[in-house]
Amino acid sequence: MAAQRGEGDGVVTRPGVAGAEAPADVRERARAIPEAAVARLAVYLRVLSGMVEQGVTTISSEELAGAAGVNSAKLRKDLSYIGSYGTRGVGYDVEVLVGHIERILGLTRKHSVAVVGIGNLGHALANYGGFPSRGFPVGALFDVDPDLTGVPVGGIPVNHIDDITTVCAEREVSIGVIATPPQAAQAVCDRLVSAGVQCILNFAPVVLQVPDYVEVRKVDLAVEMQILSFHVARRADEAAGDVVNGIGVDGVVIRP
Amino acid sequence: MAAQRGEGDGVVTRPGVAGAEAPADVRERARAIPEAAVARLAVYLRVLSGMVEQGVTTISSEELAGAAGVNSAKLRKDLSYIGSYGTRGVGYDVEVLVGHIERILGLTRKHSVAVVGIGNLGHALANYGGFPSRGFPVGALFDVDPDLTGVPVGGIPVNHIDDITTVCAEREVSIGVIATPPQAAQAVCDRLVSAGVQCILNFAPVVLQVPDYVEVRKVDLAVEMQILSFHVARRADEAAGDVVNGIGVDGVVIRP
DNA sequence: TCAACTTTGTGCAAGCGTTCACAAGCGGTA
DNA sequence: TACCGCTTGTGAACGCTTGCACAAAGTTGA
Ligand SMILES: NC(=O)c1ccc[n+]([C@@H]2O[C@H](COP(=O)([O-])OP(=O)(O)OC[C@H]3O[C@@H](n4cnc5c(N)ncnc54)[C@H](O)[C@@H]3O)[C@@H](O)[C@H]2O)c1
Ligand SMILES: NC(=O)c1ccc[n+]([C@@H]2O[C@H](COP(=O)([O-])OP(=O)(O)OC[C@H]3O[C@@H](n4cnc5c(N)ncnc54)[C@H](O)[C@@H]3O)[C@@H](O)[C@H]2O)c1
Image (cartoon, rainbow over all chains, first blue to last red; front, side, top):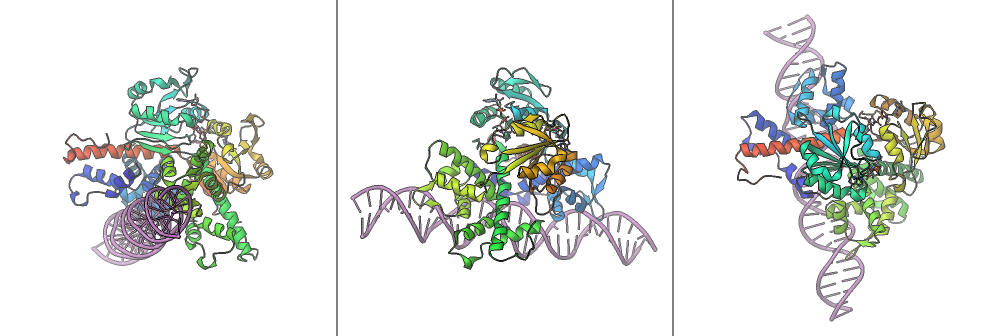
């Protein structure tokens, strides 16, 4: 399960075969893009979309890198994974770049999203306008609570969880979002998988067990905060330590 | 900004000095823990807390790794960053491990959280019981909307954003959560920073500019979905490609 | 047309993080 | 006590990621 990812990523591009047909080239290239670069490409896309709205037509790696908060060399390398679409001495055509990133990220088709668990968080997600506008229309909502079934949230009526298989099939759901209490998460996950959903975004603080072919990403806000907490603690320790060791005692506060 | 991190992390443990005082040892060790390991430690902590509740007293690296969804060697290495608290031939004492991870993550003190932007998402966050129970009491809520000021959400009355400096100081806020529309995010961030907040969790889809000493973590759900989308697309391409290339045509579907 | 200037795309080396594999250490047993 | 089996802790190798630095390739202006 963990092996699966390393396996897939490491093999890279079947070197010799290359050459002729463009589609194969694109395909092979897509396979070789490091996960970390994919995440950044999505960020570049967001920044570039903003640029388009501001009427910017051309942008240099330096400018885009600044706006995206990364090093320009890294940005160029990331873009090089998807092809050579820049013009030396000029920069990148914003719309062209948007098109290519969208293609690589598979955004040429819309991905219908199902939210399961229409509580506090589920309501916020269902009402959020940011998903449809970025290629992810919310296509279905599910909850176990019979009082909720039929009630429209964000314009979509809630279905009962028991209908998950048929509804997901009908509406061609490709991404499932789990926003149920942790106790229910694994069961919901299993039902999503049986319904044919292969991509899951999980907000419940539990580690989901899924078959190899299912991709799970988790968002655990408490973990995020704990990482922040670690940095605070480390910084406090550092400061304390430096004072104790007599380093930096001269009134120069380290990271004020 | 980037240089700063490498500097701090690389130096590692001033080897000779070791021995005597435990606190220095702990401090030096904390400095050397890789970011990726910190994120996983937070996950181990969550799993271990569950174990405590189930009455489990001892756990092997293999079991814990399974429950946390990682490789057992990685888990042991992660734990080794914080010290040697296992017993060979037996495993780890769950409570002891919980204590040490909490200490390393700085969870021995509570971190008061301020949520800014009490809209859809802000309401969900304010009502969420998962933060206080994991060491992050919500201490303040802010919004620009005058109709909201004074209204209690999740038991805490909303303050006006203009009072952010005084209120944050009073309540010793150490983590700021930004849940405003993207246009307002940078301004809110600046105000949080002026108010002395050094850790920020950002839900708005914008890249925040902050001074070096401020730690920002972002949660962009559309980016998460786009990463999932990439994998779907890649998988589709792979399947198509393999058929085209005549590889795997023998009816064996790759990742069905 | 040519030279000066700008910016991309990438080879390469260094740094991190992951994984393997096994010696060291502990508890239990005879 | 001496041995056995189990599990930790970690050195070392590997592979991914980052950042540097520069040739290649384009534009601009004379
Ligand atoms: N609210 C937040 O801000 C927040 C933040 C981070 C993580 N989370 C996590 O997100 C999840 C949801 O949080 P919440 O605050 O919205 O909880 P909630 O209790 O408000 O909502 C949970 C919803 O899930 C439904 N549900 C329960 N079992 C179900 C099942 N088997 N199938 C379908 N629906 C089911 C419930 O009826 C309820 O409507 C939790 O796991 C929580 O830990 C929430
Ligand atoms: N709702 C979601 O599920 C969701 C998901 C992902 C990301 N986000 C992001 O989170 C943010 C909030 O989303 P939302 O759906 O809650 O939006 P919302 O419009 O419901 O709420 C935004 C709130 O911020 C307040 N606000 C505006 N300007 C402010 C300022 N300068 N200072 C303080 N408060 C201010 C508004 O009064 C409002 O109450 C957005 O950036 C959105 O992109 C939301």
